[in-house]
Length: 220
Image 1 (tube, one colour):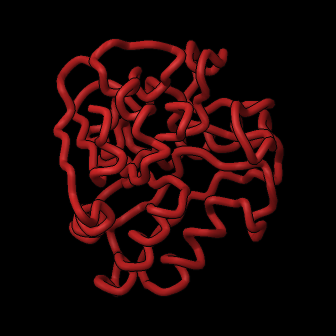
Image 2 (image 1 turned 60 degrees about the vertical axis):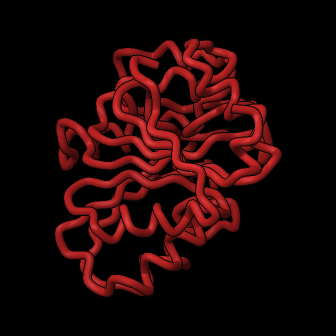
């Protein structure tokens, strides 16, 4: 990492993420997961009209848009269906990893910004972020904005579509939202200051804020 992240150890990290989301404008990238879901539900309660905000995704599983494992389906239920004005750019997981990645890259080239304004990121117990898994070939991609991941590094073991590191790192503000003691080791590895392909979160560079609870921060 090029600079030390802004670590914020909070009783309720999702509340801070809600504030960032409700104050957002422009192009915002969101992620899946149970903690982000709670943030999306609360953001929908606090802001009715989201005109001027365009939503993109860090990654998606290659399942239909209404599937229980779909990040889009989760965000649709928690947030999109409850508010007005959002412009949502969905990753089409049903197209499969390669065609889905090409489709989203075309969407980015046609409608996306040069750089995103805000990106909400998660961190897996294996220190993956987006669908960039430890030591996977996708970590080395520098030419494409979006790639398919045929074999993910952890469950659910379905192919994925993911943004690549150059897109993540170009984003103006990157915010990790991490909770739970099962993430403590991953947090220590990702934010040790040493880039390591075995801990993809450590390869994220630039202005980074890490919102986490005490359990996740236990090994920092």
